[in-house]
View 1 (tube, one colour):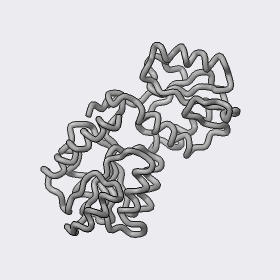
View 2 (cartoon, helix red, strand yellow):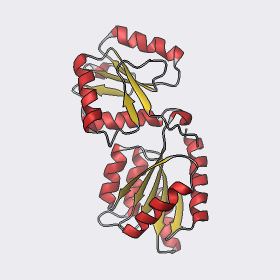
View 3 (cartoon, rainbow, N blue to C red):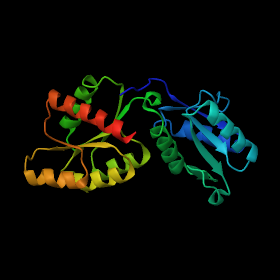
View 4 (cartoon, rainbow, N blue to C red):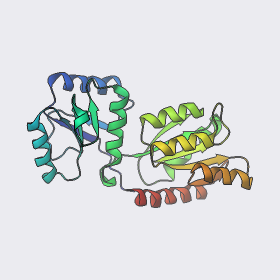
Length: 244
């Protein structure tokens, strides 16, 4: 997969001073959630990958439509107060809510051509510290693309992270504190087309059937070998090409 090492540039058209200040504060206070983005309110529109547009100004909407002819890959996000009457999406209503803003920005990034996206986003979900450490050490050496990794010890933590971030790949233990891996897989799949690899110590065919029914894309017994991990990375690349 072709991932750029540059941060995704976000610019704006016609946002009020209050909106711009609020967005700057979001980036300052939620740097860990938005670390793959860079907001520049004065950024060149022809270079921006995501553009925030004031939906309450006809001039701003017209400028965005003109920009689309020059920058066909940019993703637009409309921000306004009377959004229920507008068909264009995605939309953010004022006042802007942090969680919704983060979700919308991440979704826009998912819609970018893959050569404009940043590093591969990987989530590891396992309550075993040795397994988390093992995957943290091995995975970056088995993939050609830069990789950002996140970790969760419970199913609830995994679902919360998946709601706030768009992961390309999820390594998911079946037996977890709280909700199990099958439930986590279903919830993650309902939010985004992530490639889910189920991890288990049990080689029962019944577990594989349950994993397939939950929507998982691959199934590995612990601890996986380098060749097995390399194989699922290749399968994930093929999966992503079909999704995009």
